[in-house]
Image (cartoon, rainbow, N blue to C red):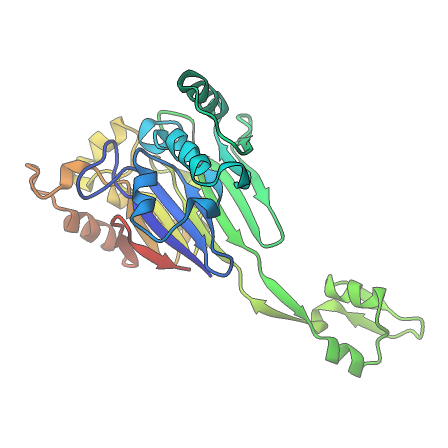
Length: 314
């Protein structure tokens, strides 16, 4: 099980209610921490939770606009101060120039980080692909449409299966390499001529799960493909549908665009984030945050509006 914690749900600049973009992903069985984006003040937001920087393993950056990365150098430096040489290395994934940004920031400020930072750059000649994979998780990226090189990410929990040893024993199948082949789902022919199929000796014990983080974007087919059948789609909704022209000029999404993406992707749940400060309680437009949610729910009823420190388990 993983838990999503919204550390920053605003766009452009921090407000008293919403900090700028950052989303934490907690793996509840291992307590390890991954981050999506790291806007200004992210480390301060983390201090208001039970999250620990010592558990931070990976950071995924959608693009290099300030409200998504200004908190990154400070967070990496603070992580080193808290753990010194004992801190484990960290991986940072993102677009071209991310490495230059971090190197120049550390050089100019003479910041020493006492642990290894491994930077993984998304190949600019590829609009989609896999950027990370281990035994349990697969991370895909897809380029979306913004006024800057920007990527969406999906994290997929792989299905887990259990080999039915007792069933194999009942069939007098000899242990050893044959068991390995059956575990891989292969067809096996024994020396005595009997044929067995791996699918008959495997039981699924954990279903796959998928979470998608949109990045900043307008309506985008790449994102629909990435988010297909997602358990959770986290999509920016900077503007109300009433300000569609403004959204288009700034290469951002409205609530309706986010809802359309969720509907076409057949996602199970949509959570709106990256909300413009213009919809705060003292705005002059007449549109309130509750109106943003209503706009999206008219098209995709399974929609929530994120708030800072909101948590959701997948």
